[in-house]
Amino acid sequence: GLIYCSITGFGQDGPYANEVAYDFMIQAMGGLMSITGAPDGSPGAGPQKVGVPIIDIVTGMYATISVLAALSERERSGKGDFIDLAMLDTATAILSNQAMNHLVSGATPVRRGNKHPNIQPQDVFPVRDGHIVLAVGNDEQFQRFANAIGNPELAEDPRYSTNRERVNNLDILHPLISERLAEKDLSDWIEIFNAEKVPCGPINSVPMVFNDPQVQHRQMLQNLPHPLSGTVPSVVSPMRFERSTLSFDKAPPLLGAHTEEILTALGLGKEDKA
Image (cartoon, rainbow, N blue to C red; front, top):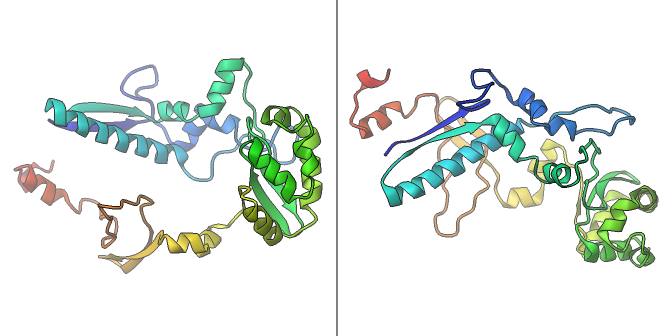
């Protein structure tokens, strides 16, 4: 009945099975750094890693999903399982649309900075007092966007009326958008775009995230009791359940904090820790 989840760099078999791994190197080996960063030939060009250990995080999430699936299967069969998770496998899996772009077309995905490879306009654009992120996701949203910036004719132009043509003619469209957005401040555009239901947002620093009214309303930052420091500020789980409400009355456990409790539940004594 035991469910055992192994997480390693390369898995339990294959030519790299015995090699060590870290998030940074797996971001490189898994192709993520080849599609992250400024385009070749532009200032600051070159491969870039993601700003957080994304492979570590996502592999942990896959581990959770795998264990939950194994628990569900055990309810039916009464048998446990051994789960073999590899960081490189995870990195390959999250290539997502970039992988399919290559597999379908044969082309090699490249770094495009903040430009989405398949949907436009989605990029960082300069405004009068900073920058704004636009994430226009379909043709209907583009119509609203064109109206919002005062150029409704763009949505009727065959070069931009469909996403396919916007991607193909981005070299022309992008400067037009940049010129228009530079005429107003960030707060002005956010108000205008929100009124038109055009997806957009500011580029917040980490402190700004925790000052965001929506983040505060959702109580993503909470001070939890801690055995060593009284309380500790913690980013809590983003999961929200209507029936099974999560409680945040304990800080993350110290190393080995529950060893004795778990051994006792298994009918083992302290001498069995080793």
